[in-house]
Length: 362
Image 1 (cartoon, rainbow, N blue to C red):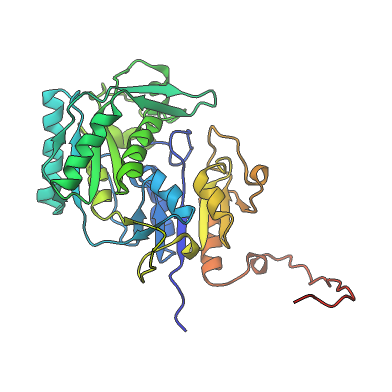
Image 2 (tube, rainbow, N blue to C red):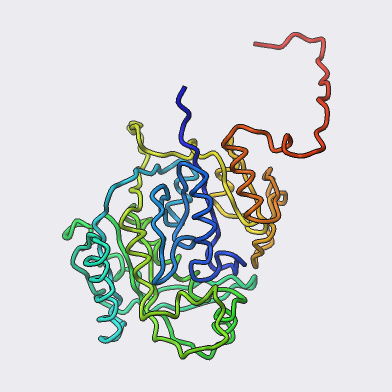
């Protein structure tokens, strides 16, 4: 009998200072390891994006955060693709030289990686990104002209026949801020991540197409004490390459409607076997939805975040592990159909359950 593909969802929420996955693509090693022990890995740009750096994981599905929430709730499915035509939106606020750097990066992915890009669009007004920090320490932000972003996306989808959208918005430069210095030294919260999520969420919610964002920033001065976890963002003029690579094979969204017909090959929340999440970041929509299904949830203690929402606080039953190394062992056992209890030297005996004398109703 053929077994169904073993499917794992890996979540490291954006902008909450995760010790692993809160920096420049530093959760990629975790994704690579998990991808090697499952048939399908579903994860999001925050995990796979590493600025100039990326890694081809043929069995990984690159799913934007809002789309992941809709997938987990059962409203949307995922349809794997061989290739997407990626449309590029550039914020009007990007200076000419910095715009050229991004266009050269886009052309480089076409010539060197063979990606399929449409012609690009510049927004008809500056997006005017503003950055904010919540009391919890999580980062978030706003854009002053969201309609300009949506008009640009609509041109790419309708006129250029783009299957996915990459957005480059000009973000505020603040090289002397304490938050940025902490981030460059491997501490604190990525000050850009929350605002990036707002931008991609808006496009995905409106058009139901894959989208991811790369911020445009002036290169920072060299720092000899730079953290390795932040270094990927400091080796070039743009963070765009990883976004274009991810979107080039991002699955398309299948929206469930009243007259919807299920087709083979599409992936739904009911196909998920396991979820891996930081132990203090269990309040997100995707995890809460998936916890209602027969899914093994693995919460990793070592990946500390600025959130303090543990699985037991929101009524989620999870296997608590110390590290991602331990999580990998649990995934291997789960995929093999082996109880984790059987791998411990102390295995308790079965207990008898009592049965009432009443006949069960039918």
